[in-house]
Image (cartoon, rainbow, N blue to C red; front, top):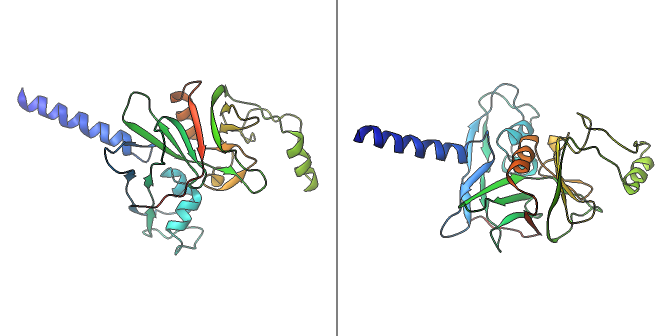
Length: 240
């Protein structure tokens, strides 16, 4: 009986640690009692057909972070066996550890699970030059599954200057830039949403909204309730 109990405890601990560190899920960590660094750098070997952009999505890392950590790899398609660094070490931002904290400087979103000593970290795409994501404190005010996109007049005019005519409404589907899930914030016109361009995650690529990988927004959508506080900061961190 003792052996079975010990095995059950070991198995429970193993599954818990696997679930909060598996690259197939969000990067979720125990919040440290001291310091603010979580996670660690990893090294993997590329398989046939792998690219850095595909590995970034597979391991839930932003494209820029992946390219910066592997600047010596210039090939579009990596040779099998190529060693690739996965920069999965993060500094938790300063300030209250609650709700959602979006750090624009690092292009990362931190979700502090209520009543748990856990934080999930997601790479995001944010507002590009001229379309900055606003700083400040807000909250999730509404949610939509399979949202339609209503391009504002400012975006339609910008695209028209490039010779592109946007419709008044882009229905839900594979060509919708909002992806399958959207969460509206208190900031006017700013959403946390999916994307049909995963290669834009971890880049300054949007018109101010916060883009996430499809699996990440699905997970955050289901775990972060309405009225979750959202704090948007611009804080450069330094690895310990």
